[in-house]
Length: 122
Image (cartoon, rainbow, N blue to C red; front, side, top):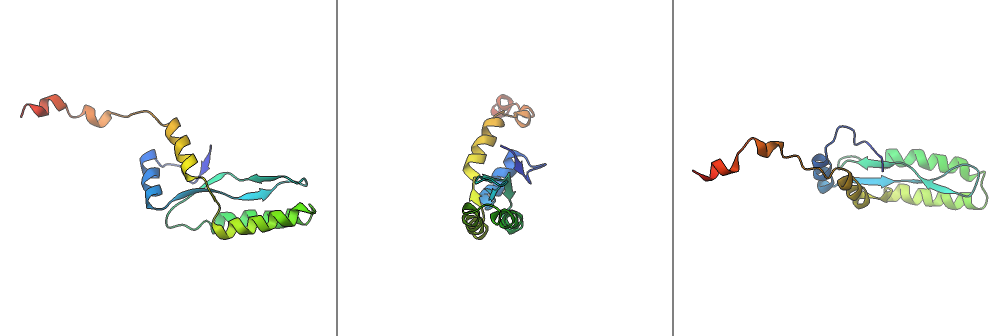
């Protein structure tokens, strides 16, 4: 899965930010003139940030399409408003699992600097 707003962050930094209250969220929106609801890309919302600026764009897209798709359009607009108020669908744990599977390499560059066997001789 691809997440927006994670450019330049390492897995360690992402895990620290999640422990401080950051989350990965999605916002549902109606796409096209058929009765189909989809979700957006996943947004990484930092602890000091509000998800309102991401949700507002998708809410206005839903209002635009809800007038054209009847009877499901108004229902999806109300659902969009619900997730706007709630702050989005939380996908933090699923995203962390996916990122940990992709970045499961162990970097032992720091431990190469110290020979642990030579430290035990003291």
